[in-house]
Length: 235
View 1: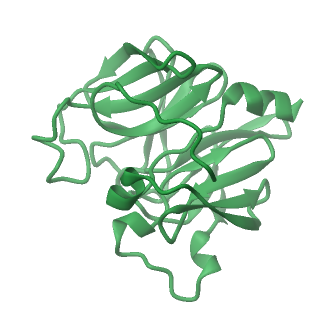
View 2 (view 1 turned 180 degrees about the horizontal axis):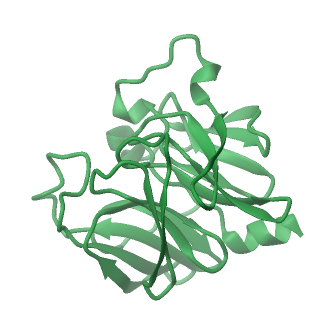
């Protein structure tokens, strides 16, 4: 849980999605100020959103890969394409984009309300799946196939760890989720921590992470493992 690096000089405002592939970090963000976003919990309609690229080794911001007309939130990568949740207030919508910004598919997740702030792609038995929470800072995480069909309801449920989970305070509720090839990791139900889960959704342990201003202010959002490392661990 120790902080090993801090990346600055990123573009845009309200970055909510991240996917790491080797030395490259991809992330979603919108405007360069908080004039529109500070008073709402989602991106207003017709507010452009961007997918940016950043070199983690050199700390060099590479700028925007592409932009779209609607808000974007959590982000996952399948080794070739992105899966990104809508952040404009549309319930349960996930967009599949190529690296150059071609819209390849639109997937509807039945149990997600408004914008799903936690999304991950993973493979099991050589088949791809999506895991998503149920809205902004709202659990549990459900398992879907790549057509959006519900496979397992409540696949990962952080609320099961606590008799009286806190559900009304944003910084204390689950958002991000990541898969390292063997285990899932979610942003903590109690704030500045992470939770580790098996590939079957069973709780493993809590990881207390180094304190950060972002976690103290607004809670942790999207998470990502290096997809290159994930692929090697699966092999």
